[in-house]
Length: 139
Image (cartoon, rainbow, N blue to C red; front, top):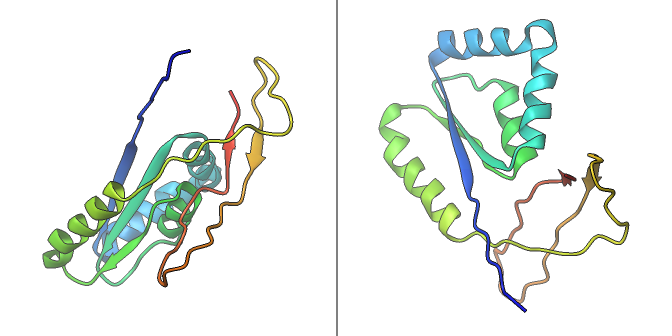
């Protein structure tokens, strides 16, 4: 028997800078149903998305992307907060766990479907929290 360890950590930082840029990004992503397509592609990816908005406005799509992928969204008033934000993201990436399980319903070869999951933790120390995707695509 062979033990196979596979590490695929993919993360994406998305920036929206200033009111004008945020508005432009939001309009572009919402045109012709692109909002739903962006969310669908994010859901199907294995990437953690960490959107960072700088300025007064954060498009709702950025928060949705973070929640959907298990990432975290940031709203910065000033670009000088970037260094601290990058450190926060790096710390979170270092403290991640990969959990595996066998689904109760068998996978069918060649069939892709969305399967919802819920991850929870029982911890004896305070402040423990779970940030996880709400499901996965079968392959």
